[in-house]
Image (tube, rainbow, N blue to C red; front, side, top):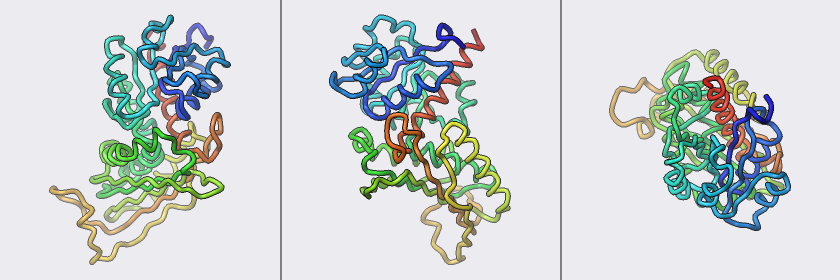
Length: 319
């Protein structure tokens, strides 16, 4: 596909996530091209890099984007700012008919986790889709892989990331991270109840992102669950090469007197919980902009790129 047929995109947010996403678009995408890099700090490294790469820039936020020459040609806008900022950005962009891909925990639009429900939302043609969180992108596919085999009464994810890879935006959104991820574990992953925990690890040298997924289930075929999880890991690693299992899926019997009822959904009938499924993951970043230990950022930008390319390909096919 030549440049004339590529879909132009804008990235709002010239911090770590936005800059990594810009570089991925430029280096990797055959269907997208950068139309604008948007920030609010004229001295940010992201805007400086964009200028060096001949990408049009503005340091006047979304208002500056809307006023830019070529704004009408932009079809997709990534928002890599903060949950609060995205609410305002989405409202300003609403009249212009752009497709918004939200990398904040604002969750105005439906949650999208590419190997689980991307096709569904391409069919829905949603104008604003939400990428959940880095922990959600890493773990919700696993919860879904288990729930495809057997009902998951409760799923808990623990995302451990290097403190160095958590910038001001990530820290400001910690509360939204846990709430949004927990909701998406249920809505997308298929768990009866979801719980999310994030740990900012200050260890030096910095640790690679590690994720743990616990699922409480009833009696089920362990081989089928293991195969489903391994298949899902393969699907995610197709667009996040550093995504992998740290060890085999583990199954632990739950004693009959274990008080698991406090974790289970309120109301309704839940299959008797007999087994805890434990899945241990590691996410190494591609180091396009940030060090390899920042896999939490890499999986978000890689997933967002996957969604944008799919939207572009669908639009091109429709045309």
